[in-house]
Amino acid sequence: MVGLRLDDFDGGFIIAPWDRFKELIEWYSTHLDLKVTYEEDYPVEKMATLTFPALGCIHIKSVEHDHPHFAVDWGQNGNVRFCFTATNLEAAHAYFREQAIQVTDVTQGPFDRTFDFFDPAGNRLTAIEPEPGTEALVAKAPDARFPFQAIPRFGVDRLDEAIAWYEANLGGRVERVSADGTSATVIITAEGAPLYLETVRTNRTKGALTVAARPYWVIRKKADFFETHKRLREQGWKVTDFAGNPKFLVMFHTYDPYGNQVNVWCYEDC
Image (cartoon, rainbow, N blue to C red; front, side, top):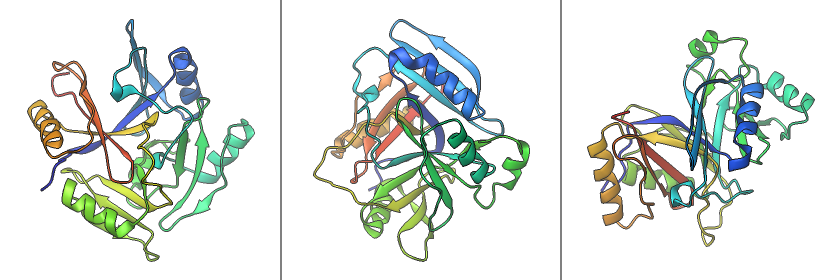
């Protein structure tokens, strides 16, 4: 029985340490071509919305309370990759090196080339070259370093098993599988957004990580959001209490069998 029905991929949060909130806003604005379009500052929560040149946005979030949804295993990145599309992958890689920003080498994967880079808080981020079908988006901001966000990537230790799990539990549909059988994209939302699954070494005996660079999926209707949260608990999923204000933005997270954090929010009345 499908437990988690998602409507679309919807950007995400970069959780920042409370005392480094402004520093991370400045870093992402400067190095990723993002523009601050909204800020809020409350006694125990702060957030800034940073908009991409072509499409979409992400949010820098800091909290000074202990709600489990906002807990972070600082210094650990797990196998969730928060991804950005680079207009010119080599130029972005060279820029980061010039700026003394930690990067990995550019690598060729089953579908595309990528490299990882790290923000000042140690959050691993992934740059990818433009995927087929995104040419029109790239053309909206051809001079931008990162014109829009890319779909998230989750590491799994058995691709066939992971695909079956996402099909059974999220209603997933396989979009493509790499020729070497190590990676796949699986559509997991009603509006057609895929998730990239890649084979990595995992240790399922270790506890799941709550990471700071966290992609989110949206459930558009509040009634569906709360019904989903209730259903997951009844089915025995590991799921947090929901965070936020039921009248406005609400969030929770759960995990797949490989310890990848699946974050869900709803803001129907915002």
